[in-house]
Length: 209
Image (cartoon, rainbow, N blue to C red; front, side):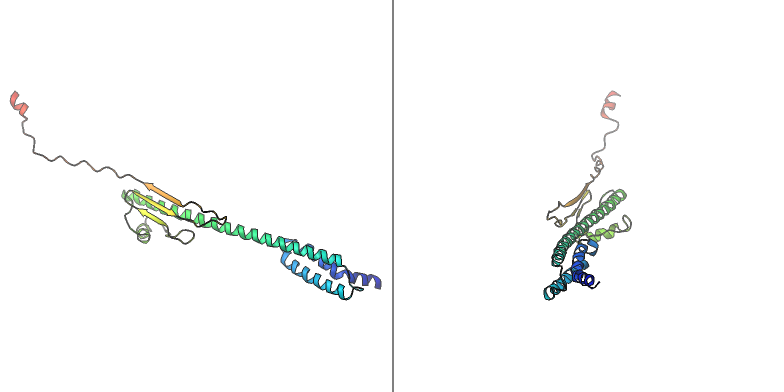
C-alpha cells in the first residue's frame, strides 16, 4: 500500500501538468489551463530535480509544457482572428450606416423637389438640414458612419452627395460612395409677342370690298 501511495505521489504533479496541458487546447479554458499547466509543470520539474527518488514523471512534464505552448499559440491565433473579425464587422456596420444616412438625405431632397418643383438652394449642410427637417425627413445626420462630414452640392436642378470611406481593414482603399440626381427644369413659357396692332379690317378685305 505504501509503495502504491509513493508511486502515485511521484507522478501526481507530472500528470497534473500533462492533463492541464491537454485542457489548455480547449478554447473555453485556454488561458487558465495554460497558466496552471505552466505553473504545475515548473513545480513538478523542480520537485523531480531536487527529490528524484520521490518525484518523477519528466516525460509527462515535458509533454505538458509542449501542450501548454501549443495551447498558447492556438489561443493567440484565435484571438487574432476574432479581433480581425470584429474590426471588419465594425467597418461594415459603419459602411452600412453611411449608406443609410445617404439614403435619408436623398429621399428628403426628392420629397422637397416633389413639393416645390426644384431642389433647395441653401448653402451648408446645417442650414440645408434645418430646411428639410422635420417636414421632409424626421432626422438627418451631417456625418457619415466614421464621423466625417458628407460632401453635398445642391442646385435647383441637381445635387451630388459624396462619402469618402477610410481604408478598409484589409488595407484596400474603397471607392467613394456618390449619389447624384438631375431633374431638368421645365422650359419657360413663351414670351408674348410685342408689336404694332394689326390693321382692321385687313388690307385685303378693303380691296375686295
